[in-house]
Length: 461
Ligand code: ADP
Ligand code: MG
Figure 1: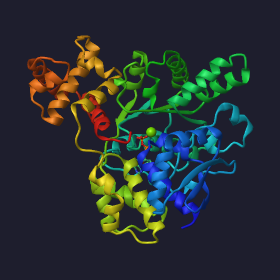
Figure 2: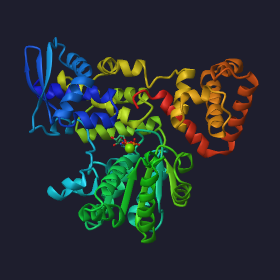
Figure 3: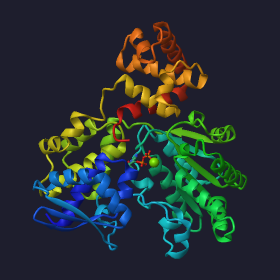
Figure 4: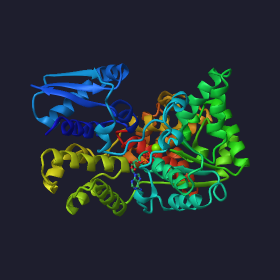
């Protein structure tokens, strides 16, 4: 095993336990510089990463190293190494790079990624279609043929790791492939907000202001990922609203993603909600077993790595919650097998995935977790649910929590009353019946509950 192989294995481990954003931010440009007698020197791109790994991820790195090498790890140090490249993890998995800031944009060689924010690895050719995403995919294909003309805006929503980013970037990449001159801008809503803030700060600097306008108003296709993070950001919403209108009037394509339908984004201005709903709204949900298998086979082909059918079946049946986790599990099996120079077998796969499979995106939950997931979804404090407060914006989430305690945990009504701030059992019955009735006629609510359940059951997000 050479240093690089060891580090690949470690990254594979870490990737499973971290959110994608954290993994990409902190581990993208790391490598092992030196291994000697149980001592490891990890190369990092800058002092900030060094400090962060030391303080926050040291234990995880040590544990992963120990697992991978099965040797005693006596010491780990971190060293800034400018030459570190993304190559360490590139071969393991496609990684979306953060879009460069405007300042850098002017100084570096323009490449597709830097100019557009698109990761060329997200394309239609490697996007598997199943009942969970066929509507979204069909709309996406139609948009590529006729950007700005049919479905505008195009709004995709669904839980984490279900392919929203992949799909919207595939649209961008396809339009660019068909028309090299198309101006495509992909940004997360955080990036939009950051760009807006630097634009405000440098009002006197014409360059920056021109750049902001150009990026977000003068493009042919604007893709904003995870738009729910604009909620509550009044001036950024205003800036987005202006850009949106200007693009829309000029028949430019606008594409948005979110973890929930437009109406369910609290803190989003009504004028934006109604505009989003005026276009095409499509959801993506968790894939069924057939789709999961097809995804795994495609990923194996991409990596040119042969994994026996029964191993793929095992992974597909046991990792159900989302596609990111599915891919993570496959990467882990491949990395471990490569390290030990063996072909994965059902037995080895069971061992390698033991922790995931024995506690698969866990299947049990508690009242506390339900309350926390509901509160986080509706952007209120868990203590609000317990409080005597009767405000409508609190009462509804509280009723949802009661409903889920009954549905998911089969709790008795008196217990539910007790556990939501000492309420009467009739209140719990009323809440359950009310939500149940609403569910029968309201598809959005169904999606909301799915999103909340994902928060409850998916541990790694
Ligand atoms: P989201 O944006 O919904 O959180 P992503 O688009 O980041 O999810 O998808 C997570 C991972 O799963 C990515 O690596 C992506 O390539 C992969 N993926 C998602 N959906 C599919 C699909 N239908 N076919 C193949 N790969 C997929
Ligand atoms: Mg995404």
